[in-house]
Each structure stands twice: as C-alpha cells, then as structure tokens.
Image (cartoon, rainbow, N blue to C red; front, side, top):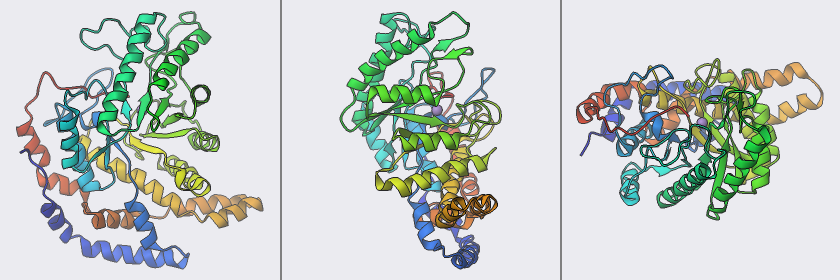
Length: 431
Ligand SMILES: [Mn+2]
C-alpha cells in the first residue's frame, strides 16, 4: 500500500484553523446579507463546483528547451491517479481526471477503474495524441495526422482516435477531445482548403464511432507547432467544423490558445448562444500558450468568462453543463500544489460571478448607465470570497489550508522514496 494522507490528519490540521474561518465566514455572511445574498446558498453552490484534473499535469511539464523534473514524480497512470486523488482529497473540487492516450493506456481498464474508485475519482473526457510519434509507429505525423496528405497516415490517426473512444468507454468517459497540431510552417506548404477538407473527412470517421451518449470536443489553437498556418486555428473554424459534423460535436475553449488580447468571454457567449460550447481547458498566460496556473496572471478575465457562464446557466437551465478541466504545465512548482491552487482559483471565479446582481445589471444596461453596469461587475469581482471557498472545502472534508496541509503531511517526501526515477515513465506534456 502506498502512502496516502489520512483524513484524520486533514481534520486535525483543520482544527486549529476552524475558529478563525468561522469568524471570517460570519463577517462576510453579514456583509452579503445586507445585499440580499445568502452565504449558505453560495457555499452550497461552491461545494457543487467541479473541475477535472489532467493526468499529465501531475508530472512536471517542460518547455522546448528543457524539463527539470521534481522528486517523487508519478511514473505511470496509477501514480498519476494517486496524485490527482490527493488534489481532490484536499481541494474537494476535482472529482474527475482526464486521461491522455497512449500515455495513460493500460491493458486492464478494470484495474484502473478500481484504482480510481479507491480515490472516489471518475473519468472526464479522454484525449487523443497524434502530435508525436509513438515507438515503432508505422507512419509518421511529422507532416500532420488527421490532415496528412497520405491516406495511410490519416487512417492511423483516425484509428488511434477510435481506440481512445474504446478505452474511454471502458472507464466511463463520455467525451473525446481532439487537438491536432497539424498545419504548415511555410506559405505554399499546404493547400489551405485541402487541409481542412481532409480534417473534416477524418473527423467524420471518428464522429461515426461515437456512442450515442458521447460527444467529441474540437480544441483549436492559434499556433505551435505550426508557425505559419494551423488547420484548426480559431473558434470560427472550430465552430464551422462542429456544425458540419453534427450535434455531438462541440467546441472546446483552451484559455491559452488565442491571439493576445482576444476577448475570450465573447467567444464563450457566441458558442453558448449557438449551442456549441463543449467546455474549457483552464490555464493562464501572459504571452502565448504559456500554460501558467489558472488565475495567476489575469483573474479578471477568468471572472468575465464565468460571468458569461453564470448568465448561460440562468438562460439554459440544467441542460447547460460544460466540461471544466485544468490544462496547465507546471515547470517550477510542485504540480500537486499548482493543481490544488488552480482548482480553487477557477472555483473562486465561479463564486464571484455568482455574486453579480443580475437584475441590477440588466436594469443599468437597459438604461445605458455604463458606469454603474461596469461597477456592478467589479463589485462582485472585488468581493473576497475566500471564506466561502475555505468553508466549502472544510464542509466537504477537504483542507482549510490546502498547501500547508499537503506540505506538513510529508506526501512528496514519501513519494520520493516510493517512486525512484524510472526510464519507462509515461509522458507528461504541454497540450
Ligand atoms: Mn488544451
């Protein structure tokens, strides 16, 4: 049996913090009550919030230049689940894991499912990988996968995606996320229309293999590894393809996959309006696809995105259920700490957006009172909802002070002993 933090340890860690939390919670509760907001309802809402962790996020990522692994990194999908389970144990906000194949492929899905059950973890969307060659692969993805000029390469990439669906079915997943880096680095390298036609042909074959209750999420990205033209570069192309494919195809928004200064919340509003928002890969960035921790650079943007999502929830009702996942690369921090912190930052944006007085906002918008409309949003964003997040975690059995609880548990040191570095470690990467 490998080391797990005991629930008793978490509760004893909470003990010395709960009185201060209660007093902060009561103070915020009185303040919110003056504006007609029930802190208990908001806390319940926070407790219901969930964002998936990416299995590959449990390992140290890297850049094009180097990877500097930490100690005690997971060497296989079982150990990744242990780390993701620990993230959920302390944060109580990440009950599902998103797998990436073939990195996380196992011969016995039942054994993997049992291991996930032991952590009370479920499986979110599964991800295919045709952006790198696997050992002994018959064809090469060097010049593209689903859009390659060669039918043999396209067939291989399609077959891999269909295999991902089969693997996901055995684990209880309900969606396949497809991101391809296909594109060109030189003008003239690709016939721009021809490449997209091939993409659609390939995707149609994958779409045909989807079970009735599955969806396929099309993930776009502006650039990299193609630096001149990427086949699925923007939400417009993604939307057009999803429309062509059918109801089960939707568009996934990765926060890092846009041009700088793109108004992402507007993209969200458009995709919601036309029924094509699949969900999110949360991360943050300053320059390009930096894959920094969610909310670490631009928390206001995250809030504005959730402002659209809360608006959508009110308009669409319970049928509105986008998939939330973290997709970040941890180069200089302990991945478990980054994942816990990021999950709570996304949850924070959700709770802040839930605080917006929507009747008041609509009235200010109707009367063109621009200043007061803007201030209505800012008031919600500037409310420190930390006591709500901490209380939600505490009531769900998590840790009030997650990162210190994690550090004091000695989890990483235990893993350093249990997990000596392995040459056969399965991949973690930047997606
Ligand atoms: Mn992504």
